[in-house]
Image (cartoon, rainbow, N blue to C red):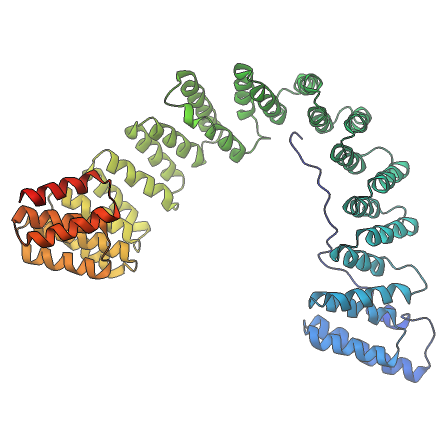
Length: 505
C-alpha cells in the first residue's frame, strides 16, 4: 500500500498464442483456393507447424516462407513468419511480416494486432503502437489490457493528453477502479499536475472506502503534492480503522523521521516491526540505518535493542534476527554476546557458512583458541573442503602449543587448498611451528616455499625477517625482506618494529 510505485511498462508478450492451425490454414487469405492449391498449401504449412513445435525455428521459418510461395496472401503464414523472425532477432523483417499479417486480413484479429503493437514498441514507435491498441479498444471494448497498454504507449510517446483520454475512456466503460486510477495518478504526478493526481486518488478512495490500500495510495499522492498534513491525516485514519497496518506505521515513521520528529518516528517504526505486512528484509534494512549511532548515543542503542527484541520475538525460527543481534553486539565490541547470538543463528541455519565465519571471527576477537578448536571441528563436519577452516584450526592448535596437531592440520589443509593465499597461510603456520620447535632449517625451507608461491606476501616477508633477526642469521637478507614488506605497507607499525629489531641484531 504505502510506497508503492505505479510504473508504466512497455508491453511485453511472453508468448503470443497462435490461432488454431487448421482454422488458420483454411481461412488464411483474402481469396479461396482451388482444391489442389489448398492441399499443397496445407501440406507445407502443417509441416512448418510441426517444425515449430519441435523448436526447429529455422526449418519452421523456411516452411512458412514456402507456404507463402504457394499462397502469397496467407496472413496466417505471415503472422507465423513474423513471430519466428522476432524470436530469431531479425527484427526489421519481423516488423514487415507483422504489418503484412494485419494488412492482408480483412477481419480484425486480436493476435495479429497484438503482435504488431509489440513490434512497434520494440522499435520505439510508440505512437504507432498506441494507435494499434486504440484500434483494439474499438474492436474489443471489454478487454481492459487494451486500454492500459494503449495508455502506456501514449505515455512512452510523451502524448500525455492521449494517454489520459484513453484511461478516462476506460473509466467510462468500467467505472472507477484501480488500474486506470493509479495510471492517471502516475501521469498527473509525472507532469506536475498534483491537484489532478490528488482528485483522482480521492475519487478512488471514496469509491472503495473499505479498501485501506487505496487510502494508502492517496497518502502517497498527498506527499508527492507536498501536502504532508493531509497525508498524515489519511495514514492516521487507516490506523484508526486497523491499527495493525504496518505499512501505514512505516509511512508515518518515514514522514516524521524526515521532518526530524525522531520520537514520533521511532514509535511508529516499533509498531511497524510488530506487523506482518512489512517484510523481514525491510525491517532489517530499516534498523541497519541506526548502526552508526549505536556507540555514541544511549537512546539509539536502547531503541535498536528494543527493535531487535521485537524481531527475535516475532521471527523465532529465522536466523536473520539472531545475526542482527550478533552484529549489534559486535558493533558495541561485546564479542561474548556477539558470539552467543551467532551460535543461536547457526542453530537455526547450520548450512550457512557465513554464520560459521562470523563465529570463528568472534573466537579470534576473544582469543579463545579452545573454543575455536571445538567450533572448527564441528564446522568441518559440514564443510570438509574449505581451506579457511584448516587455517583457523591449525593456528588455534599453534596458539594452544599443540604443535603436532597444528602441523597435521596444516598438511591436511594443503591437500585441498588451491588458492595461493590459502596455501601461504598454511605454510606460514608450519614455519611458525618449526620455529617454535627450533627446527630452523625446516622453518627457512617453508618460508622460501611460501615466497616462491607469492613473493609479495607482506606478512610472510615480515615473519621471515624477524625470525632471521632473532637468530642473528643472514641479517642482510632479513633487511631486504622487511624493506620489501615496508614498500608494500609503508605505515604498518609491526613492520617498522621488525625493521628496528633487524638493525638491533
